[in-house]
Length: 104
Image 1 (cartoon, rainbow, N blue to C red):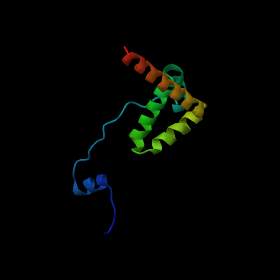
Image 2 (image 1 turned 90 degrees about the horizontal axis):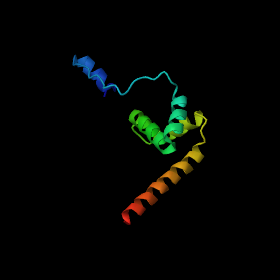
Image 3 (image 1 turned 180 degrees about the vertical axis):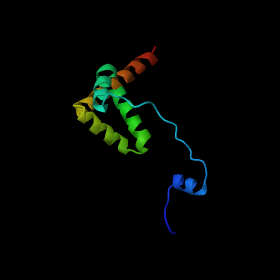
Image 4 (image 1 turned 135 degrees about the horizontal axis):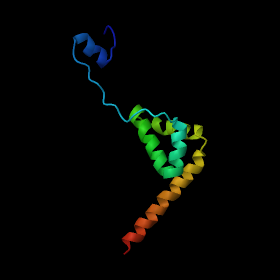
């Protein structure tokens, strides 16, 4: 083996067309920390964490997304541990609601 190259480099060397990656969403003028605070207030902790982890996972493709989301939430000035309790309470409330509905 002489060298390791990326697929895009190989395509370029062979004169093949480059595949343009589909862009996701748009760049926001609002800083991430402010987006997190707004979503937390509007949608609650569970929806905000889901949104944030999904975004980080789309970028990293691994479980580092959870750690990155936690750090972003803390940088936004939100109590992450308190947020986890809120998420847990929300999940329990949903389970109880579903359980009550299935008893009918």
